[in-house]
Amino acid sequence: MSELPPATLRLRVDAEALASNWRALHELSGEAYAGTAIKADCYGLGVDACVPALVEAGARDFFVAHWREVPDALEHVLGERISVLHGPLTEQDVAFAREAGVRPTINSLAQARRWIESGGGTCDLMVDTGINRLGLSMSEIGDPIIARLEIEILMSHLACADEDGVMNAQQLQRFQAVVETIPARRTSLANSAGIALGSEYHFDVTRPGLSLYGGIQRPELEPHIRQVARIEAAIIQSRKIGAGDSVGYNATFTADREMRIGVVSLGYADGILRGWAGSAFEKGGASIPMLGKVSMDMIVVDLTDKPDLGEGDWLELPYHLPDAAQHSGLSQYELLTVLGTRLKA
Image (cartoon, rainbow, N blue to C red; front, side, top):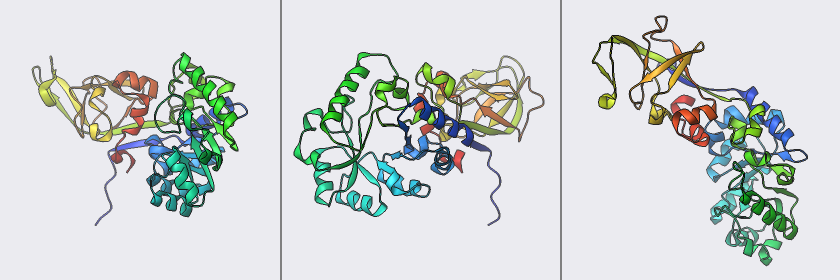
């Protein structure tokens, strides 16, 4: 088979901006060390594209969610630096953790027993202080089995760090009680937004995720965080339509005059969901409006006032996450993690 033709869409990951974001979050963490959440393929931007830049910047603690995410991480960092947040649900998980040399995050008394009965060793421990997802309940922290764990990082997770409310202080108080009860080498509470809550939330390790990749959940972070992801796609056809002609599914746009339109090689199969309709691409600082609905593989744009643009030209979809969230109606987290595989091919 001959060589594949070049792609007509692409995701650009600014590795220098990513490294800069880690350094900024590490500095904002004060005396704590900034870990890195690399779950969900580095929030959709790609482990291979992101982790080397994070390692070079100085990151040394890495957090994944699933056991299936471990092999890709091991291509770049030692197993002892990787924590698997979902913990050992089965004996197979335990065996894999030992073989890979990664740390399981214990989330329940059952997981604690499973780990101890298999021989124990270094692990992390998650305690639920109010978010009511994974984690040991506050009523279980005194159980004798927990005292037998060799805990590297004792952690909890903030539910409302992107807001100013009483729950942050409640969780902080509960976690302080946990820290006094359960011995561990290091402690961790703050996610990206939690870093901005102040030094009392930092403990020994912070665990930024979204802000590494350009997300800004609190105004205190805005001066420090740079855009990492850029989405670009080519115009694959241009044509003229007349007054009364409609564009796309359900004819949601109808031309009131003669127009020149372009078809862009990007759609909801690539994570650019239909909520983007009515937004615009950019080229050289100029805005190129979208017309009609977003299709699976195509978005139609208005080229009427852009005679210099045509087939083969590339457009950029503005992807500064706070602004893109406003345009699309998606959360900053969703904007990254829904990105399709064709963008990363």
